[in-house]
Length: 193
Image 1: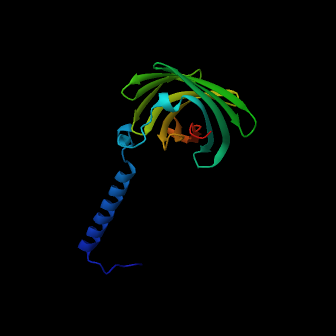
Image 2: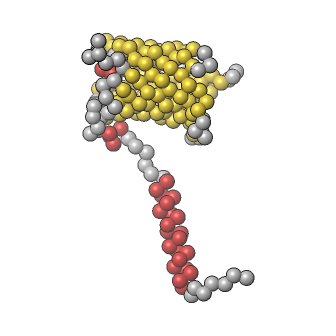
Image 3: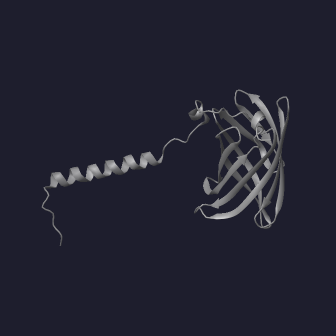
């Protein structure tokens, strides 16, 4: 039998201190998610009408919930705008040779707010930009084998400079994390001729 030389009062204080430390750690794990306003002072300012105008290339990966890369891809894109209405034509080539096309129809609502629609988007994608960041939230119909699943995306874009933007999107269904998509967008530099 193990005995302690600690007086009972000291043991209670130690147990309370340990419980308090665990509670603080648990609360830290429930931190509030970032919002676009958190990036309002960041530069350069992301304007979709400027960045998604003309040709772009993106390289990306899908990772499962364990972090394992399960698919790699490249996207050739062309963006065009007429006033507040834009089109982003995306052509995917996957590492297994499969191809896919998605055409986004974008609307600049003003005040950093955007809407997006595509054939495989359920309803409307809603976006909010501030500073160098944009957060898109939408549901995508994803075919897997012989079934189609509706998957929620929490999609963040961060403009690093006038040519490079990073994109990270968390995928979930019924609140369960399924994996992430990470992309690097590159826009040709008009000064390099």
